[in-house]
Image (cartoon, rainbow, N blue to C red; front, side, top):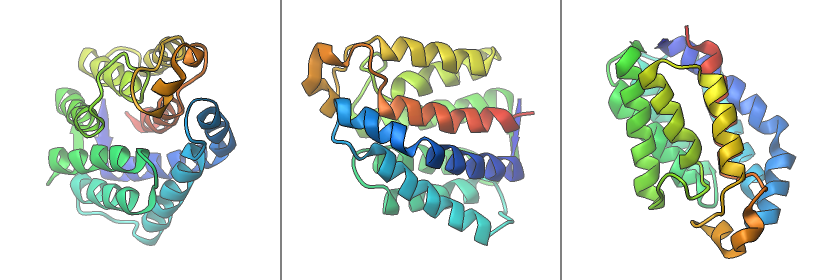
Amino acid sequence: MKLSTEEFRKALLKAAAELEQHKDELTDLDREIGDGDHGINMSRGFQAVQKELEAQEEYEDLGALSKQVGMTLIKTVGGASGPLYGTAFVKFAGAFKGKREVEGQELAAAFKEATDGIKMRGKSEFGQKTMVDIWTPFYEALEQESDLNATLDQALSDTKERVATKGRASYFGDATVGVQDPGALSSSLLLRSIVEVLS
């Protein structure tokens, strides 16, 4: 599987549209097991990303594109998710520096690095019902070259049935079982948009 600079830009524009479309759903989920601002924050961040990407059609490489997206998200997304998503893209920027396209294990390694960045920033591990539960199986599927959409479906379904033990959702304890984590859902929307352009 291969990701080019132009395709990554296209995927992020698609992700911005998807997150906008699911803004209310993300906010409603976050009202159930969080502080009710995830959809609004993600919308604000990715609308700003969309503006940047529409203003600049050409990027010298995947690293420059990722860095701009990461910085935009850190600046504009409020709440806990801004630094987490921002960190993922800053990690991409390092992994993708000087590269106009990336494929195979190199691509998987970049997603692992982004996931590790999210885990470190959020002090979270797989299985705590957070976005890490989506990013981890995703980079593992890239490593094994298995079906990415099926992996995301399974990860979302698994995450939904877990008890949240991290972040604000953990205050709700067993009541979180059967409720989708908003960060897991927004992550799946972003990653699915990327899957669509992977050739």
